[in-house]
Length: 139
Image (cartoon, rainbow, N blue to C red; front, top):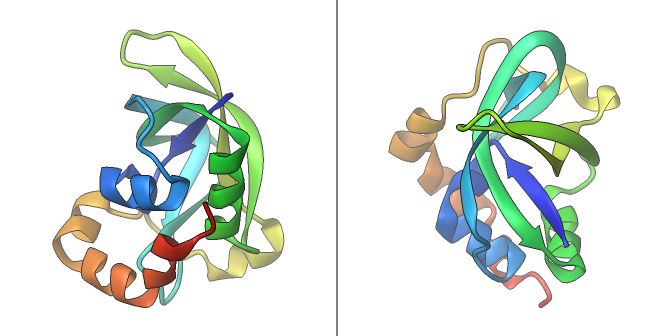
């Protein structure tokens, strides 16, 4: 069992449930020394290392190998699953897996921070229309 730090579309509980096959226990967390950027022409973000930056997200706990395989398939070629350490609200450090944008695709990351609230207001519908297949990943 592993924990997974989500910083984009998977912060939405229903999307995480559809992608991973269940909704694991979760809580807010923060990842230091990474920056979150919009992906050009998409509704989702990517992260890359950047000293001093911070990314707010959700820590999903205790995902099994099947859920992680489903997440790997969902994230696709642009991302690499990496081990990181996130901080919880109480200050404790927790090891987790997260999906980092591969350096060879860095040219697809737009400047600025990806805005989760804007995604919920105006990007989610487009994301779901374009990526409806995430609900049909093998179980």
